[in-house]
View 1 (cartoon, rainbow, N blue to C red):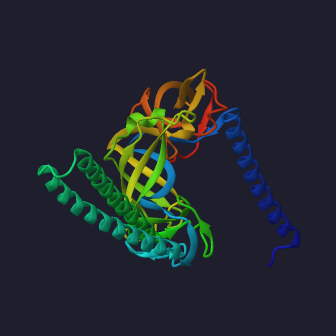
View 2 (spheres, rainbow, N blue to C red):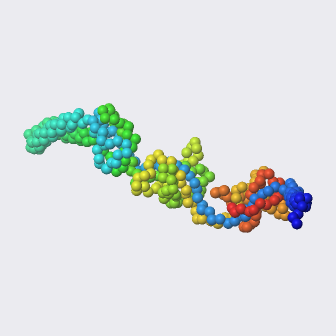
View 3 (tube, rainbow, N blue to C red):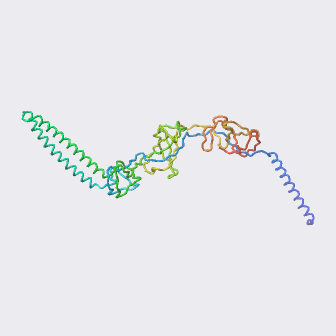
Length: 368
């Protein structure tokens, strides 16, 4: 016979009572666990481990050409033609600027004529001297006449030298109206225009040979002892992310800047493709020594008090404070010189809230 309706209700009630009892037991168990852990701080841990560290010095600086020439006017005049602009590729001896040369060409002609005239006068005076010399030796010319011709010959020789110097100078000036570059490179910082009047010494442009460049860096007094010429360096620039340029430290200024107390140094970098340009910001890593193995813990494990550094280590579910001597801090790690051993566990979270003997609860350990 099928069960009566009231028996079905009894079965349902029994199931509900069983489930309720199970829920109550679970809640009571959780409450008991929470009461055990009441007051304990949850912390994470890591182990002190040996890591290989490169001995490097990180610096930043500005790129500049190893070889560059400031092109300046050597004569006064009007810029008649301008053959290059910034960024133009230049060969040694190439004409960059032509200054109006007409006045200088005319002066060469005038000085050439003066030189010829002086030479003619010298030849005439020398002939007269030779004749009078013979007469003087024969007693047919007075000492006064001979002295006068000697003086005239000396003056004629001086006039020729003077005329020759003037001619040479005018030829140089004419030559200098053609402004050329003594090196290969790129035109930069052009500061002159066609039709402009220039004077001797007026800066016209630079020519920069970028086959090699310097990274100009500044080294603090505290870091000076770490470096010496010949050390290798890795250079990077924002313009070429992911690309590293190899360089060598070639220059260390022995005198510090009197205001900033820093020492200017130069890293020479080959630049065969010419992609590194003057004025770029660069970062460099100077390799100051061989790689070494050092004991490290995460930097987050470190705390300090009254100029002494400490870490917390777990012991019997409590936090124990251990004094340590630290070294370099790098890549989120801190070197431990004394106070810990390899493999020892340290607390890496909530270290600034912990006190000696505080109860702790360790969550699953994470690596360094």
